[in-house]
Length: 75
Image 1 (cartoon, rainbow, N blue to C red):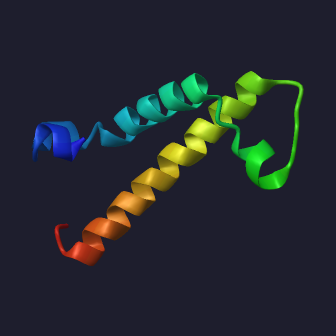
Image 2 (cartoon, one colour; image 1 turned 60 degrees about the vertical axis):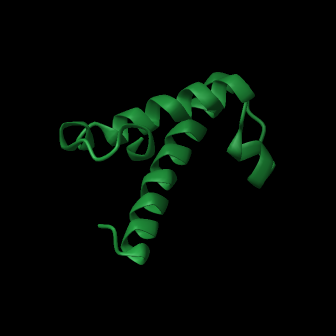
């Protein structure tokens, strides 16, 4: 989001929620199921699989972003 809007300090506190919304949108659009792909687990509720996958993806993207910013020295 910072690449799109620059360094907007008022938007910084909402970045985890924005990344979650984007992850939910993308996992449901592309039907990404981390549990089936990585672990081979199938369930009867694809909605919950997609939703949990979105939570995992958004959280991992926040950690990856923080790590890259610390490594590059921009944070």
